[in-house]
Image (cartoon, rainbow, N blue to C red; front, side, top):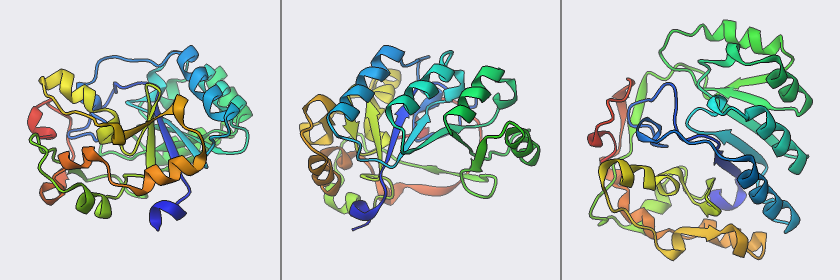
Length: 261
């Protein structure tokens, strides 16, 4: 019922890499190659979604990685609002380089009603000062959670894939809610969408099956997406939720396999 009633969020990496690189990052940014989505690729996805009546989400989250690293983030903001006039568009950042952004970025954020969402980390940032800075630009800013993150969760992947997909999906907190758009496919969660980063970095062989994603170009209706959301995915066999821990001290990644496996 939560997956049916929740106002859907579509998350999209505009970059994979990051300038902070948290240990056990659920989007695998510390071990990702430098990557920037092209404007042509992005517009192709947006055009496919809008012109075929597939706007199933109420919020589009532009993220990574660190999205402010993208050299064309201003154009991405303009393009996103041009296609989606009636939804929330949220840019998710760690806040490190916000004050370095040029005026054209702030003009685009204001003109297109962009929300900036910053996650608080135990690093050298005065978040009250940052909030004041952004608000003085006439931009809405929120924090992802009220407090500085003292701990990080460790989502453990089972290399052998022996976990029960149904049991996992019943208790999963993000699968089917925070959908991911990646390379023309919609995935149920970031662990599935970006697993190729782990495969490449550590020479692993985590594999997708056909039920793990929807091909954007082949989706016929929003009803099809709703059906996809409700069903456990074959990829769920890789998440060992019994071994997942929440009270890991936040720190910078050392890019070790043990941070994810």
